[in-house]
Structure formats: structure tokens, C-alpha cells
Image (cartoon, rainbow, N blue to C red; front, top):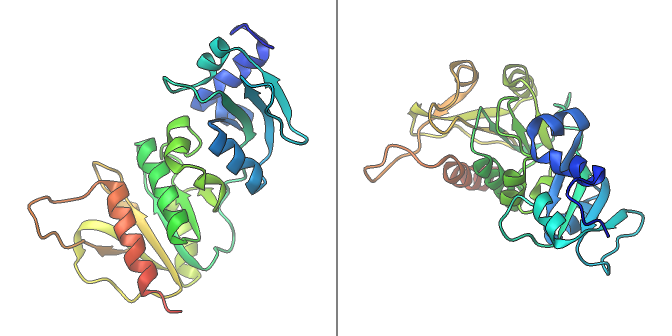
Length: 246
């Protein structure tokens, strides 16, 4: 059992709470039995499992037993679950050919909770993937992973420059719909190839992104001008998927 927070393996895992360390190592840290189980079941490459229970074991995966004091250092929540793991971050490059279906595109979202919630909703509603601009909140940060509740491992997560990606989507027959206060309140026809663009929480989509899309303003019957980004994304995903032909 490792009982020291200064242990090198513990320090290396704990460093993954920081975005720079995640980028440099290509690894991320997950917490809770559900996330660890989902990661393993999905085929993600789990490097090391840290547990406070020596009864836990996963075939072929290094398991290290640590004290509760060490687990508290590894965890990013006040009440640790007693289980966390170091996982290889999957390839998030933008594909040459996008899968058919709904691609959810996130333009500069800053709240990792919104990013994780949108990924979870996209998974639940059957979206084909989630594409993030490089300046979005990291989908593999602890908060985003908790909000996604395992869905990060269930569908493609892509990260890349949106101008090039949207141009490629359009060339492949995707209808790109961007939520925008200056948009029409009438949705364009939705085919089996569609992309939903969700802009930054405060500023919306960038001018460059909006210029490549059909702009849509969701009708508001009350006095609020806009919705939380994750709520807007959920409503729009459901609407667009429902309108896709069988």
C-alpha cells in the first residue's frame, strides 16, 4: 500500500489534474467506479488503477492500493469514491470523412461542466460525434469527465480548427446550423447529415464560424433572451434528430 502523497507514481497521476500535464503526457485521470468501469468496457486504454480496496482488480491492468489520505490527494472532489485511474487520451483528430448523423460542434465553450453535459446528452440522443474547437474547455478535465458520466468514451470526440472542419462538413453534404441571436426562427431542412454549432456561453459563435452556417434563433416565449449552452444544445439536438429522415 502506498501511504505517501510524495510517492512518484502518485505525484505523476495527481499532476493530470492540470491541463498542461494532460497535453504533454497524452493521459488523463478519471474518478469513481462508474467512470473506470465505463472506460474499461469501452476499450479505452487504462494504464493504472488506484484503489483504497485491495479487493478491486481488473484483468491486465496495473492496480495500486493506496491509503485514504493518498486517495484524497488524487481526487478532485471533497468525498473521494476510493477509485481512480490513469487513462490514455484517445485520438481526437478531425477525420477526413465525418460519420453520417448529427455532429455537435462546440465553439469556444469555457465551462467544462457544459462541455461534459453536452457530450452526455449527445451520447443519450444518438449523435454521431462531438467536435470541439481547440480553445474549448478540455473534455478530459476532471469536471468535464464527471459531467459526461462516461459518455466521453461512447462516441467520437474530435478537436480541431472549426473553419477547416466546417468547410469539410459542408463539402460532405452536412447542413450546418448555428445558434445565433441574429438567426431566423425557421430551421432549414434537416437531412441525415447535419451539424449543430453551439457558441461560447457569453459571446456566442465566432463571426468566422457563423459565416459558414445557417443561423437559427430559437423562439423565446418568455422574457429571457437566451438559454444556458447545454440546455440549448439538448433542445436543438432533440429537434434536429427528430427531423432527420429514417
